[in-house]
Length: 276
Length: 296
Image 1 (cartoon, rainbow over the protein chains, first blue to last red):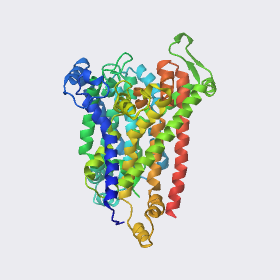
Image 2 (image 1 turned 90 degrees about the vertical axis):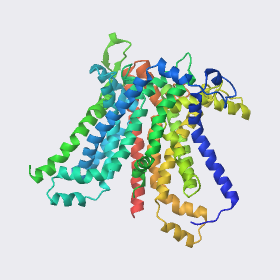
Image 3 (image 1 turned 60 degrees about the horizontal axis):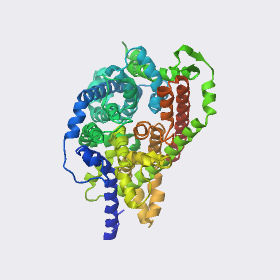
Image 4 (image 1 turned 90 degrees about the horizontal axis):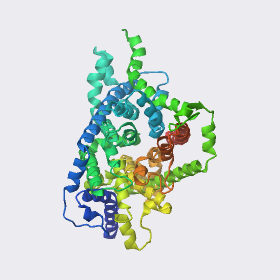
């Protein structure tokens, strides 16, 4: 479709693009800017766009609450659940993609349907059980809860990725004397590496952002960053500059990380939808 | 171990850990929910204990106007938000489906809301909507409306929450659509060009039919997620003012973790689950029909 467009067309085109960029970017930038404002610069109308930046809010936020501890928790829980989900999920996906199992399709659909459930519906029983098992307020408990949501996703995605790789490669290797699992490890796994990265990114981002379970299942020790942010908002007051600092601190790692792995992110998200 | 037994048992061995985890932490809770939903159990009244009351939790739900209002609200929220996201996301993707200067910079910027933590999304917009010093309120003032604190006004709270969801998830529809647009085959377009089709005709008869499947996937994923929204609303309004933004997830939260009415909360959770299953089944049917048409 090669069509020549006039100047007017391109002016309108770029205006729309610029409007979209401002719409999607500005709120995040606004949060970022607020974290460098002093309290006096926040509680004014109209909002101030030029102000003397200060690090006070960051210092306050990180000294008043043990945010580093919560950061650490977020990281441990995110990576813990991602690793468990990737290992068990990929094995299960391999079984579903490469073996003739009775009801293989039903099993896949069943696993996927777990992911569709509203977390709040599972929250009540999980909360009661973890209380009984004394797993409340432990990072392990949180890792277990997150794995239920990450695992189905990994199985579903990895199954698709494995099916997309021709089986002949493994079969040839097995004819050459490798066992099935050796063929899986030495032939298939290296080919799956980019897909594994893509899926892992999603697990990490999901777990890093998760709020509800962390909110219900932790108290002080295992609390993660999103929960600590919600606690800046109380009935009496909201310390906007501090919560902005904490919020910025929470999303910066994800944004930077996502920017560098953009290629994988797009690949992972669009794979299921794009394949023919 | 010979090859035949390996073929038979190995896959189950590989599946076992995943299935056990999913059954233990994913499926059992659902059955426990079902069990709880037929009991009276209020944690603030431990002396009453846990009593089996058949379907009383359900009947009290179905006869309460609060439940139906929350139900309707959740549907309105989902339909309007997802509808807008689909239109805007797809439209933006059509716009992006060409080469232009700055595309590689603009593209990741548009994806930012999507990867922003939901809690922080709620936080940002609660701040932007603040009646005293929020950016949006200032804009509304400049424009000359007399609406100020959007989130504390029952009439504007739900539209505001929908607006936030649109901001958050339009990029998702945009990304899926754009990825598919870039992968469309060229030949139908060339044929349409030769036949002298107009831009609108090309869109209607070439682009749209080929995009249908990906749009359905986006629609399904977004509907599921919008239906169970919690974090953003929890931070912005906690379901208020009054219960202007009280969607089903928040209602479950209120019943169980505020009033400690475990039975009623579980019944609500089961109802919500059933609705989600019905929605996904309908989509699946439509989807299979689409695929059958494509394959013919």
